[in-house]
Length: 218
Ligand SMILES: O=C(CO)[C@H](O)[C@H](O)COP(=O)(O)O
Ligand SMILES: [Fe+2]
Image: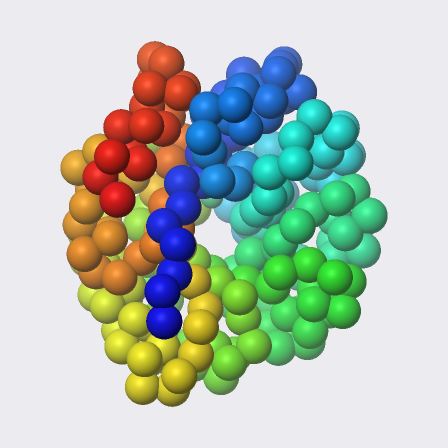
């Protein structure tokens, strides 16, 4: 199975006053998707934006809108995000009592359905849903804020997921998120990840140049 390597810049580190311009710039700069960090102030200690902002950005880009839902009970937001034009929703196994049903609802709404685990959550917690997801996100920082230090101990879970995928003949992608730069991306790739979220690294300086620096490592 060959999975394409992808760079997913996180607009969490972009200028919140210029999202239309920022997503256009990402498309012109060779980004493969736009990573949209939705935080509710409950699941994590930070509050960002919701479906209204996704809807406002939608006319400005054809890129895949990859919504990382750091919200309690993400199943309550499926219809709003589908209507807003989200392409995929990635939901935390820690945030719902009904992970299987929530993933089913995302698929039924026509979006890609993905699951995410925090640094303290084992792969075992998501084994029952691995056969139904498009992507597994392994957090490499604790969720809530950009600019944190990469946690290398999370890569063991990336390796385990890549092995399970092979044994079971599955085809989900493996994404990493948190502290990805032009050094840590290589560690994550070697562990078996193929989708790389990067916020602070991409937005420190020239966006296009930084995306190319990451792509050069893949
Ligand atoms: O989900 C996130 C935080 O919860 C962000 O996507 C992530 O932190 C990206 O930012 P950086 O590359 O600066 O670590
Ligand atoms: Fe994220």
